[in-house]
View 1 (cartoon, rainbow, N blue to C red):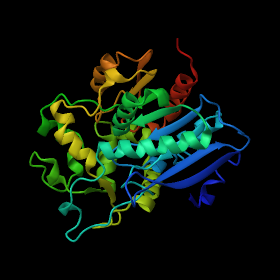
View 2: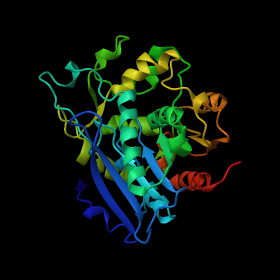
View 3: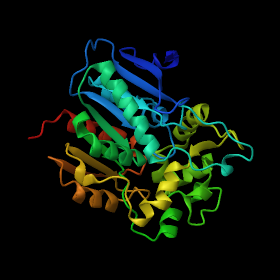
Length: 347
């Protein structure tokens, strides 16, 4: 089923965009998928099909396909360089299915969209993309939690993936759980954790002010305004509200599934990763911003040391970037580095 993508077609006339809703593995769950490619791209290059995997709070379409600073998005950039690019929203995010709220609101339900569910959604999307493009393998680009989802998929399906890119990779948290989670999004949680993931509820509500504060925390005000001007953030937040507004309280807040938060409390904060990097057997690139306080460089370094099966691996720390560097002033450097990695051949 194709959704209306007319509003997106004028940005780059030479780039085709299409939106699709595909059936998930669970009855009633539909997954939103977006594709961008050059109009004159008759058949995709076997090596240039890419699937993006979003993080814990923001859906794929706003994370990877929102025009920033008067220019294009990450999808636009790769499409203009000949890639056949796809993104999707995990169930509960963006334009994908969101479960109805029960009486009492999201606090009465269990955390929604945990990593196994995200892996199932990614599997459905990869099957859809491979069938649509008739390629045997795709490239994966994950951001934050999306690196754990992508890494988990590759560790079980190396034969379906050509290259893996991990931006701001999540790995086990070195600090004690309570301290770690307080630094890792605790400010966004409206309910007490009490050490048990079930206390989180199905969703959390994220305000614009909290999101902005988390994005630029630790930065001087003038640096924050350079990297992500308030006007740019305002436009980006409005696009987010249009597809993921909070249904239970404040419509100016964003509603985000708590499945990843449950995984952080129950697994990542106690050194129990959701996948084994040693089982990844494809070329892998890790990139992290020097000012990333959500997934600091030590996570990428720990993960890098465990990629023992990868035939080639690369770790890069990019200057003047935060956890959300893909949307910031210096984002093109990130786009370029990932493109060059995807285009490279490794022995």
